[in-house]
Image 1 (cartoon, rainbow, N blue to C red):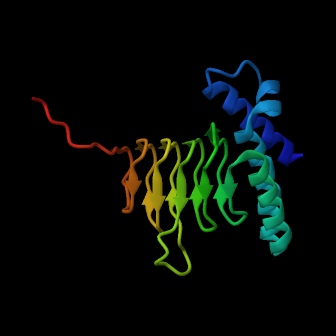
Image 2 (image 1 turned 60 degrees about the vertical axis):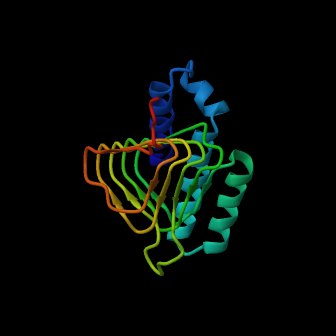
Length: 171
């Protein structure tokens, strides 16, 4: 029953945060960011009970249907809003706090240099912009905004906005 309550809370959160959504039923039926949370909760449960192959299998089915890849080992807090979602990758040792938003083509991944803890820890109320890459076993604080196409390789303290800015020349 807790499983269904959490999913309803997720659907309500998506409806509240997405101005394009009309109602909760629309979110439940049409939103891949909601669908992947269902797959992930099942896969994570199986992963936590050492049913690793089955967990990965469920995860891959979710990826096939949504275009969103979340490793079953990743720990996700409450009310995650995945907007558009296509191309998102969340690695095995990543953690995501409560009330976060992740936009399409973002990666919470590894650098290939680390062995055990390889992926980032994301705090509460964090926004990860479209195309952003947050890589390695780093800590991202609470109330952080990571701008579109930014690459984050170091710890980020609370209440910071990280952006990518190309050189601007005025003639």
